[in-house]
Each structure stands twice: as C-alpha cells, then as structure tokens.
Image (tube, rainbow, N blue to C red; front, side, top):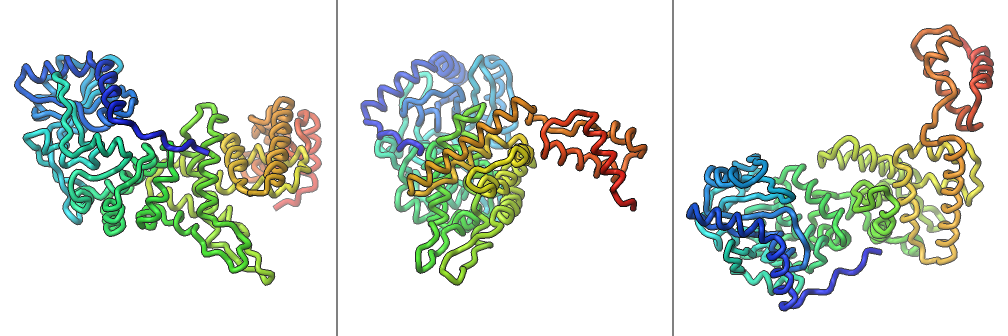
Length: 485
C-alpha cells in the first residue's frame, strides 16, 4: 500500500527548509530579482515553488509574479534567458529557459469567470498581496520577494502548511465561483500532499459541484491525471465522491458503491477498487519506467465499472457480474473519450479493463502452451501492465487463497518467460507472410489471404514455432478442404 502521508512539518523545519532551498536557487532568483528591480519592477517567487521549498522539496520549474506588464517582462527575459516563449501572454505569462531552469513570470492579476463561460476574464493587478488573494489555497498564496528574500504570507499559509490543511485565502464560495476547477485542485492537492481539506471548503465543494460543468473537458482531464498519479490518490478520489464532483466528472466511480445484498455475499466494489488502485501502485516498480504510471493506475480504477450494469441476484442469494469486463471496457472507452484522452491512452486502458479477468478464465493453473501464447498475444504491449492489474485485483482477506492466486500467477509468468525465450513470443507471427501465402495459393489480395493468415496464426498459437515447410503443407490442406465462395 502507498505509505502514509509524511509527518507534518514544524515551523522551525519550514524555516530551515525554505532557507536551504532559496540558497540553492539563489543564482537564478537573485540575478533575476536584481534585473527587474533595476527596471523599476517588483518580482516575487510564488505558489508551488514556495510551498514545496517549505516542505523541503526541490524545484527546477520556478514561478514568479511581477508588477511588470508582459511586454516589459519579455524584454527583461530576452537579455537573460536562453529561450523565450509567450503562449500564456493572454494571461500575462512569459516563460523562458535558463540553463537547467524553467522560469515563468506572470503579471500581477485578478481573474474571474462569467457564470456561463469556460474561460477566465483576465485583469492585471497592481500589487503582490492582491495577486496572492486570488490564488486557490493559502499554502499556494505565499511569496518570496526577490532579491531581498522577504517572505510574504498575508493568509497564514505557513500555519496551514504546518497543520496540513487546505484553506482558501477568502471565502471558498467566492474562490470556486471565480474558477470552479479549484474544486478539482482541492482533491488533487489532498492527493499530492496528503493534506486535510478544511470543512468549509468541503461544504462549498459539495454545494457548488455542479459548477464544474462549465470547465472544459481537457482541463478536468488534466487535473484528474495529476490526482491519479499523486502519492495518495485515494484521498483525492474519496473527496471527489463525497462532494458529488465525481458524479459529474467520473460518475462510474461513485456508481461502484453498490448497496450490499442482505446476506453480505459480495464485497464492497467501491472500496475494493480503491484498494486495487493502491496495490497497483505498489507494483509499479515492475514497469520499465517505474511510476507513477497513469495507464496502469486508471485501469485499476476502472476495472470493475461494468459491475453495476451487469449485477444479477441468483436464487440462492449470491450475486453475479457476468461480462462486466466487456461492459466495463466499453464504459471506460466512452468516459475517456468524453474527457478527451488520447486514442493511445483510451486503447491501452480499455484493453486492460477487458482483459483483467482473462487469467481467472483458465482455472487453477492448468495452462496449456497454447493458452499462454494467446494470453501474451491478446495482451500485446500491455502485458506487463496486465500482470500488475491481475495481481492487484486480489484483495481477499483469506491469506491462503491470496497466496494460492499469487503462486499460480508466478507460475504463469515463468511459463511466459520460458516460451518467450524459446519462441520469441513478443513478435508472434505466422511462418508465412501475405506475399508467400498469395504465391503458394495462387490468389491475389483479398479475403482469402486474410483467412489464410488467420489460419496460420491459430496454427502458431496452438503448436508453437512451425517450420515453413510444415506451415505450407498445413495451409495447402486447409485450402483444399475450404469451401469456395
């Protein structure tokens, strides 16, 4: 399971941490601070870099806020940075790269949403405290003036940081009205930092959840990805469900909280799903890139979403969820399309959801080589993630059963490794290609070639590596017996 949230920092620890981090990034912040000051402008390090500095976390992406307007900011950065970009100019942001550092400088601003608009109206502000007051949470509403390194904390963000609390600088209702995505950010920061969300903030989220509908699917998706990939996603997901936000952005998740049957003969699917997610996180080191891995995590989160649609009560009081893997894959694909995920991500997660029961379909371990080959073929490039999902899906409290399932899957992976070495399972293909099939059968491109290729693939899966001569003989025999159209 993911480790518990880290112990809360003491004020003295915060002071030591921020001093050490400011010393580390001094070559950037002091030089840039002097540059803006010489031009008559204020500059302050702000937001996440300040918060994380106080938590002892290092940053190479530095956010600043300034009294300078974007054109003046661009002029000052051009003489200092290695590369400049201005995609955020409409929001007052100019970015640049300086050696290994990525820097973004944003003009003091205040912004608000029209109740029916998805885009903020941006107005530039004229002072640092006003700029901090429009930020999402007090722990992100702290700044360090540069080059003097004066800490500016008008909303007691340091105290909230020490208490592990997420509060808004002003009334949460006003903050969420200005930018409804901040409700998603509350859940995301809870998942990232392991913090508690203040009761008044939770209540405002619950009351205003419907306002998230004005936010674009892409922005909601990006917050959801950050939440799922955070160290403690269960905290954030639970908050989304409890406030009703999940009913809008990911309704398949709260739908898993099925009422239990009177005999309590099936597990709580919602809690089971969150546990599977955490167990999948524990297995991420198996992946070539380690973690966090969004695809394997989201597949764990969605693997049982087909259960509410397929639940049936049997006369003896038991409950069945036949074909929930297939139904769940369709629901997953539909939800991910609505959230504007890439086709590659949609395909990967949906395939994992559809395949997550495949292992259990082969009984207690009496796998033929043919079955192993088909398992590898169907998983394709998602095989390692399927290993993770299948193992994580075991949440039984019966220790003997859990050990048996783990042992059986160990044996399957050994079989896969052996056959992979012997037969190159990673590149499963028939002994003959399309051109060879056409030449042997004397046919041109068309359905017959496809059918012949499929026959040879089934032969490969059933028998393993087949020599070309044997494949040719088998194909000719199949062709002779095949009824002509």
